[in-house]
Length: 138
Image (tube, rainbow, N blue to C red; front, top):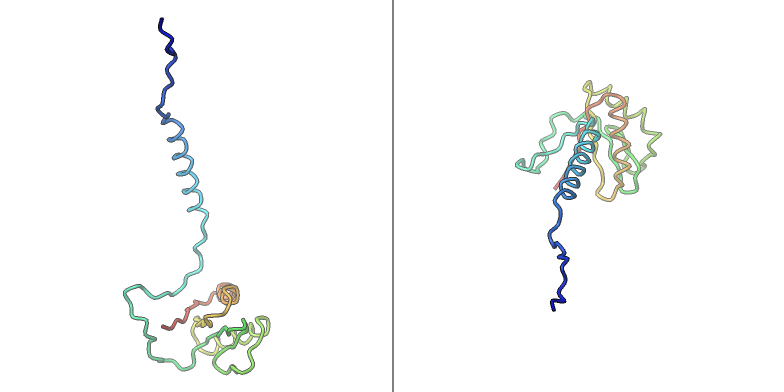
């Protein structure tokens, strides 16, 4: 008498669900790449460039310095001992860019400054159609 099971269970997985999953992930990544916003041009150093600062050729360069306590100083003419709030420096930054005769604004931030403080200056530069240049140091 044969008491063995006649119903065999298949142990192989179906590939249809795997291809559905891969197709959905592909659609997700295509849509996310199209939705990304890359409108703010930023002058960053390349990996093969040295990190030495170039010599200063234009001493009257419009710059905004973000301090460690997330306050701002507009150069030239700013006082590092008395940094100001963001709303107070908008007009001074615009005047500095107009006085230099170029459409560039140099942005330098302290390593402890918040990213939001630097991005506020980037947004100001973008709103006024200035070219932001991020300053970096070793």
